Amino acid sequence: MMEKLYRVFTWGILAAVYLLVMPFLFVALSSFPDPCKWPVLVLVYGVLLFWGWKKVIVKDVIAEPPRPSRPQSALIWATVLLFLFAASRIVFFKFAECNYCFSVRTDYLLFPCFAVGAVSAVFLVPFKKHAKGFIFGLAGTGTGLVIVLVSGAFNLTNFSYSGEKLPVGYVMNSKARKRFFPDGASRFRIEGESGFLTWHVEWSCKVPQREFDVFRKENAYNFVLDRHDVNEDPEIPPVFHDDRTWEKPYYFYNRRHADGGGLTMRYSVPSQTLYGKFSNR
Picture (cartoon, one colour):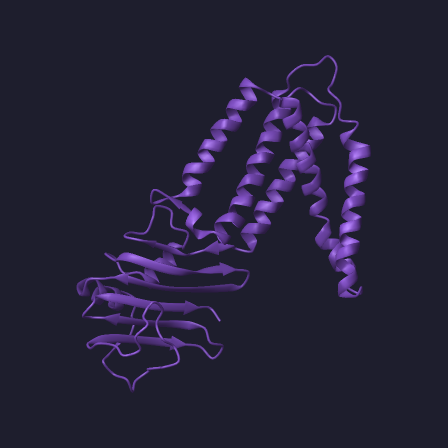
């Protein structure tokens, strides 16, 4: 069983290493017509996998005499953890409902369990020493680190959340939370995401007026009260509010940029609800 698992992991490492080469090849093929690029990439990737199987996988035999190798096992399991971490970023970006479990960020619960499992496996059921085990372990760990760093550089984050309070480890940074959500806010409904050079979010939350007054003063937001003729833009309706006729009194704040980005907020006094919309462009 452990030998089969080792083969699955090493094949995964080999596939990931060659996958990192593909972006460079894509750039090298920039002069090719678009319909031709992808078939060439797939063909080259297949050839690399075949070459790796003949030159690396086949020759990665169990070392003599057969015995467990905890150092090789530690590198292989570290690779698995890094791959899982990178994959989870993609899953959590696409499916925001997976981001939190029991009002706690899923990362905080999931990865300690994986780490304990991996460390336990290294000591309890280590892989046998293989001729190329260290090469696979080092290559896998390095590739995993590159994938994690690249995914972090693109800053794939899904802000979407609905709940009474913000969960422990909510993915939005503390500076942005201070700008958008007053202390004492509750009943959050948030949608938005950030990616490479993009950032947008829309939200509503319940806020007692005392906390709202503190919030706008602390952030120096120049809200306007009940004035349709000052800074009002009918083309920017607040999110999560279907009725364009607002019951008075309400506060309005709008600071948009020429490129369409900026911050818009409304606070409904009767419902004590803050609505907001922000984008960086």
